[in-house]
Length: 468
Image 1 (cartoon, one colour):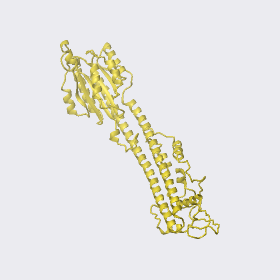
Image 2: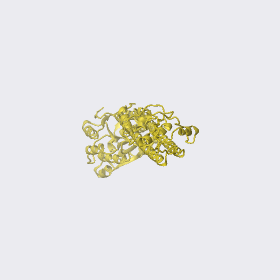
Image 3: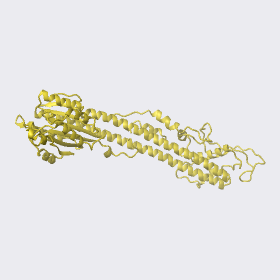
Image 4: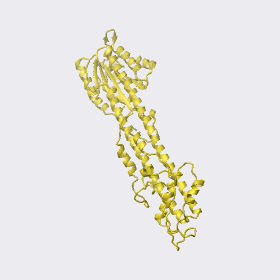
């Protein structure tokens, strides 16, 4: 099976560049430094009052700035207390918060941002790199983000046989009539189809006689004696036993009726094949060529195969024209073996390619569902980390206020800054998830289209009419 390589670099750049807009408060460059201790620079100013009543001056905590893109989040050092089990009340966390000196009541926005970045650095979680998922998308991926149902997506393979039951089908070839030969071939053909396939049988001209008096009755005789469904040996045998050669040949009307029979199988998920077996041309004043053109352009999009049964060259030309108009094939058979061969060739090809096609689709759907799970797992993992960090920062700021290292106003200001950051962070994660799902869907469509084209080319005979 072909696999489609996608422009990974393009999507990778897109995913990470969507977060490259700078938020207010972010500075120019992320410093790659260790964050396991606090470096404090203090300049005493006698007249400055701090939150605790002591005199402190501006300070700087040694920590990288808070990241502004998803790529920076991945590369940012994991915090000393980055654990899903971490609580602010933990002794180690409290000791780290105790080590932070009080900040001036008049601390600048830059100092507050510096303090918030330090607190962030303590708890920054370990984020999975989206590159792993992007690499996996080099294999095709459904047009829908919902879980894929193989049953819903499986293509049906439907074959309808239209059998001429006009009076001329009484003619003998060897020891059997053409009708007897046709019935035997149909039984063998239907039994050889894959169990996933549906088969139907329509007959025409099986009432009345070949006389002019019975023409209207015979031309109106068009019956689906075995409705389109999986093969059942006894039911098909019963259906074949209900008619014998009788009257006229309503060829055009039989194709119109076949279109109605298959109307429930419209769309790309259905493969429809029509076999028309006739030993003569239209005799009921219909226009089979025009009807064949209409059938070709209908929503059921059938492959139409015309089998002429022991025709002379004059009659053969009309059926060739019908096959050409329908975009299908024509073959003239002159004995039982040739008729069986035409049916059996299709059943063998159908079995081979429908099995291949279903297996290929199944493989692609399995991969697609695995990729969907991986994308959502990645997204949920990031969102869980966001929630954990936000929680730890919120309660760490409350603890710093309780320890009288910051004022209530400073606590709220830093908390709102953190809240804004995580809202933005969350939106980038959501955009990343949507982008990855879109890539998956586009790849799936491409893969299915390729195997569909290959399947269509191999499941039916060539497009040119031919004689035997």
